[in-house]
Length: 64
Image (tube, rainbow, N blue to C red):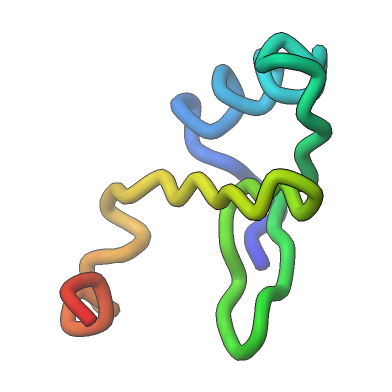
């Protein structure tokens, strides 16, 4: 889990935490099964993953 989010993640979190998407509530850096996702709405069963340079070493998992 990262302590310093990317600028894109910061902007997205500002929008998500304000409940601007049909009142869905989101959490950051949530553990689901064996993965850590960037943002998740558990009630809606919806995940948002923001790719970038931090994922380049794990690129082999993105296509799975």
